Length: 475
Image (cartoon, rainbow, N blue to C red; front, side, top):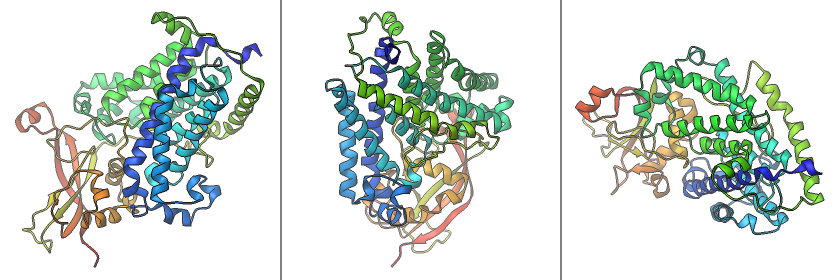
């Protein structure tokens, strides 16, 4: 079947696979560094407790067979090592079957983590990584020409990511339709970056241009992705440029980088290679019959599973970032259907005083990424994902988001739990645990140029109320 593969996409596949493996590597390293205090045996939402009430059919994965923190660490470290090997090109040095096996192992390992991650892993980019990682199993390696059908499946995935996000914006907040959402977004987004203050202070006409450009990237470019070359490459470049703008203006874990990776599936690799002065495509053998059969079967599976996300996109009650099956294949995506106008932040404080009297001195816990000290410029962490910091943003929107884990978090702070404290930037009680811990709600806004010069503060904040009254350690 001559139509089955196209050598023109050899460079696109090469870069796509290495970059996708790099995203996998980040995901596994995040799991290594954060799982114990979040979902470990003594975590805020322990995996053993979750598995005790969740059958295999609802949460398939390795940990349904057995769970221990040691096994979880082994799974995460194995995934990190294998991801690094694929980034280095190991999957192109082995036979096709072995290469597919490497990608399949990465998918199974990460699926096992996501399916026990609970609210800490309930982000759209987790499903996006799993869906892209599953398709990568059938993308082949350097020994065979890229299969056209899988490249189209990756474009279909990118279409759902971008077009779904565009639709949910137009159906959601009015500010997307009147082009004013960017008046607020840079200030109220989950985790601002070091340039977010400057983006927020752009003139309002430029914010309207930003919003209009976003609509072009998410509602027009995805349709052009489905057209022949060179139109598809041009649309992919629009998507990539838009995602790089988002990388500069905020911290969205690996969502933007993974979207860029997917856009590479629509780039004509031969034209890109010629433009970059690279040699012509290396000789690649025809795909074996068994591989062609597997690709055809996977294509049929994706077409069948696409019914649910297509129905969702056509619905006026469109869901955002939803998986229709427990293995996270052919999902629906979307983000920021509504934009907050006001930013509320949860500030956690402790005191040595035995009682919360008016003269008690309260000291603030510092987080790595989320806004805290008004004089501290937001840091760049993406594509690394600070899971606790992100959930603290949700807690500022509604206390209901924090109900399952906030009190356990406070309990760990009251005992100076080392694993939990490693999630934070500063511990104001390094020598002995605090006697009391509380959580207060503050309203944050970016300062203006005059305030910044006068005070050196990037944020202005004022107290709003109490989220959690003073709590002492259980005896």
